[in-house]
Image (cartoon, rainbow, N blue to C red; front, side, top):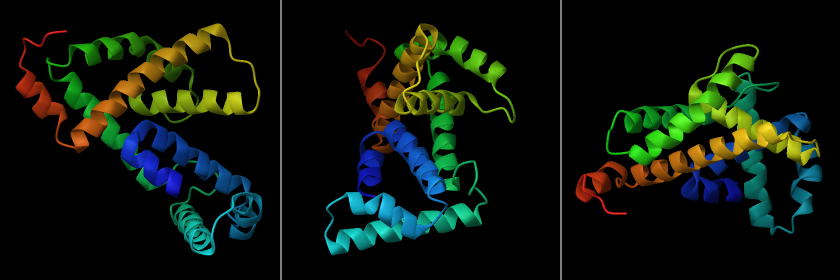
Length: 191
């Protein structure tokens, strides 16, 4: 809850990956608050008030996961909305010729997105969700100690650069600075 709130304010990409981890953590504990209390919360030295807030946060997520039928797989609607917001921002920035650096990052990333989408089984994901699926998959591989090929590392490095730029633009957009700052800087921006 505390980490999620902080990440949400600072970096939407980190927030989304963190929330996906929380969903998996809840699943690993059988959507059982007692198990989460024992396996997760008791590991932290929290005061009683903070512990209760954390328990309530996990309980609300558990409830949402059950109601939204994502107890076994999938993502909470709030996380899907975040992906949708990022995809929408991606389209808006790509439609604006002032964002040449972003366009370059996107087109360097696009071959990896196309390849990943071609390899994916099941329901096809959008471009932005594909990027996050790749980042999350590699994160899980690293956490489990699995080896990652050089080709995968190169792809993930590019995807990470692209999503980092998208996350930065998301923060600027939330603060009404993305398009306004680019308007004010004009097309004669100096490097």
